[in-house]
Length: 250
Image (cartoon, rainbow, N blue to C red; front, side):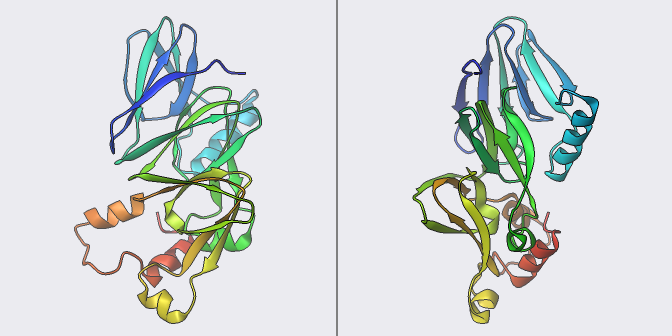
């Protein structure tokens, strides 16, 4: 079992994870997410995995999730501190995973983790969800033991779903959920609702049991609002849902 990590999350909607390492303690992070470090914290970029083939396959899998080819590893020679933050306004969620416990997260959510946490790629099990979900077939998969930090946009809302309880969510607003939660995509209803309801063609359905985290701001929404070519209109439209089906939303 990994030694507990000493950390605090500071800030509101531009949060920073302040991680305090003991001598010899190590974490790995997505490249480019470090904000600061004390001088006695050493860092290097490297691939994870025991063999060369495992390292190459791991790097290839990470690229399809939007992450970098290599992780940055940080190790303290003495007691040291590192700060990490996301790339756009949002919040940081920490999952303290037990041995064998797994969570699934949206693409590009990973911030940092303890070395004992396994980072993998999960393929959406249902064909409909993969084709229609707007997030493609790929999710990030983290298996404990250890702490993993993920970042997403805006504020977070959390649910603990009972067995058989279903939550319907905008397809881009899912941050993370337990592996026990069933994920699927459903058509919103009639043509009138799809065309004029302003919520797109599809909704994600998450069915318990398990924990679910959703976000109030997606990177896609932020891009549209900041775009100089924005001409107004509904937040969602059929064309956006179609591009999601084709996997070209990003």
